[in-house]
Image (cartoon, rainbow, N blue to C red; front, side, top):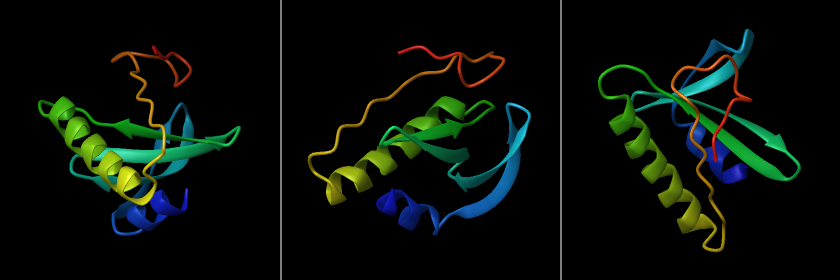
Length: 94
């Protein structure tokens, strides 16, 4: 968590609504990010839209993975895709 927070502190910060709740988000390279910690696991959500959404998410994910692997070589990162059209964050695919 500390590694992520240090990186996020250098990014633009704001609030947005996700699943009908106002949440704190950070903006990096066309991607809005927010995170949750559950059961000793950090979940980072990346949201993007528009023509370059997939490229933006790919670029952002590579940068985040680079930072985590550099600071925590043994870390396990698992990427989970969410459907394009969904009603809430619980609708995921693994």
